[in-house]
Length: 280
Ligand SMILES: [Zn+2]
Ligand SMILES: [Zn+2]
Ligand SMILES: [Zn+2]
Ligand SMILES: [Zn+2]
Image 1: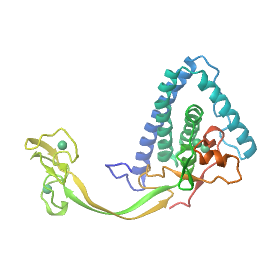
Image 2: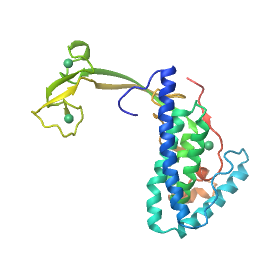
Image 3: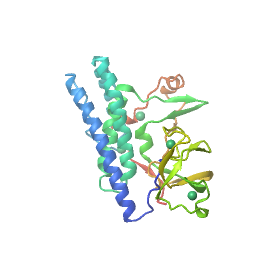
Image 4: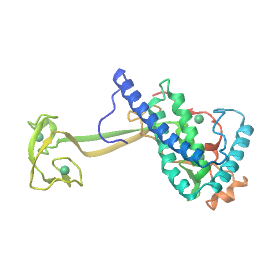
């Protein structure tokens, strides 16, 4: 979950918050993707086609496209200068993560389609060049494939109880005289392992020195009560980051997967659609 500001409750303010964050994520995704594009174009190598067909319900066609893409990308990877390959990796991963974030913010906005396409565009390059490993752990296959996970439209909602204390004096916010948001001079001290000026565990403030600090509500004694799955989490980025994959023991891929040699191909071809929970 993101620290800091609690995202607004449903309403116009939340719509604006989601749109602003979503656009910002989308721009980050695009910028990183263009940088990758320039590196690939600069290599002068034949480039596998991107995702022309965004979505299909034809499983056989989807499989054919995935297998062909896997082959074409391996060929491109083998021809690429290893230095360029190293330059592309952080950029394409950044683009993919930002695209997933964009969809998490924009799923109810008209720009959702652009965020969706950005996920597929980045994923195909990332998977094509660096794979999408399926991990076998304690009898279960796991994936963190961003295509699979982002198409499972669920989020997490945590029920918590929290005590808020004043960052200046450490008393419960209800009991102190400091005005939240106002500035006070404080002597930097460690309180419950955190700096009284900035509330961080590690910072540059020198203990015993005076500083001007803003009174904030600091969360203390956070007690999780329950975690539930919801379709629209209050924190748009509170999502699942790993999921299990079913591979039938009869499937030829099973033995490869057990040895950690299987890659997910879902991210290499057209979309299989979204699955979701009923709206909360
Ligand atoms: Zn994948
Ligand atoms: Zn206080
Ligand atoms: Zn500090
Ligand atoms: Zn899709």
